[in-house]
Amino acid sequence: MKYPARFEPDPKAGGFVITFRDIPEAVTQGDDDAEAMEMAEDALISSIEFYLEQKRQIPAPSTPLSGERLVPIPAITAAKVLLLNEMIAQGIGPSELARKMGTIPQNVNRLIDVRHTSKLESIELAVSALGKHLELSIV
Image 1: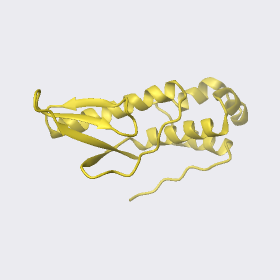
Image 2: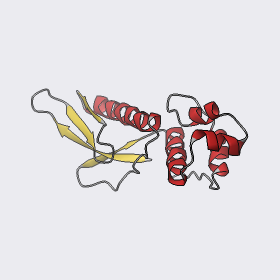
Image 3: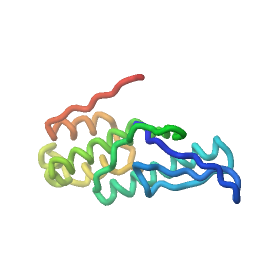
């Protein structure tokens, strides 16, 4: 999962200001290209974390426009995003999903916490309990 971002040169401070159309809360800057990409990844993850904490639908990445660069998120984070979005789409909260999985709500909350280290297999089980399946691909 990669989100398009605009890296605009900052004539006053130098470096770049980075913004995301799909996740408008993610705004950052970097002094050079490498730092700008690192800061963009961090801002994107932090903003996604905010969405996950509030249990808000996370927009899917749109097709990049001319002049935009793609900023990736880790695969496990992408799986958490997909899980939460499916929970919201089905109107299922952590308690109901936990009941379907035969576990406790705290375990489900950990699955949608970006900072918690989750096993992909656990996310697969949660997605399966929602009647879906998770697919990965190499491109």
